[in-house]
Image (tube, rainbow, N blue to C red):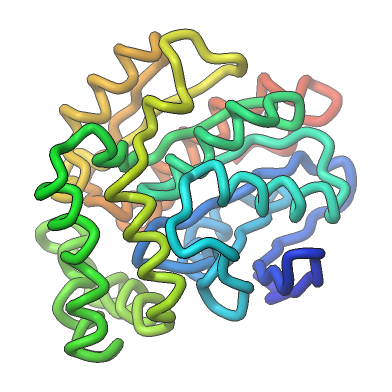
Length: 277
């Protein structure tokens, strides 16, 4: 995936793109709290028929942080809309992983017309309904460690938790490398959003667009039972990603890609459908 950069009114927005000849349908990929656009590279190899667009969320990589120090998912959605509009994306399938699922949910709530379908992958659901002590604990649990340990030690300690119990060492290295890129100011903003916002604020029981929930069956961060409960509440299909942890698209890219393709293909119609995986 090629690294690219746009200058928006709100500042630099960086992303990775895997282009395909038109009319390859676009999949827009939103990473989680400890990751970045580069984390999708392994999955990209399994989706040859799609145009893939993966952003570095505000405050990640060289993307300009949000203006507010206390953002909601809706603030990230505003930047996402500016980026997609600048790219001329009229209709896409939006894939939000972990914290990216909250951003994707907020985007669908505000801009449903640009979204053909929504995939919530290993979704974080936020702690906005928790008591103040719990919210503060969640807010401080990650960025204070990054500040104290530095990116290298933080990444080495945390990366294995994002994958299945017996993960491929190359995948652990991949997760660690992306985590090593974390910027403290952007990471603090994202942790605030996780602790003080909630997915249910944006996604009611009835969705405006088709949706799918997927989760690694060995996810230790956002457990499968929570993802299944979310799918049930939203009345949308649920799909396990076998032998995969929280970063299910890294542990099991073939199964993850198959789930995306099965979901996305009918939404774009036969004329736009890519070649079968």
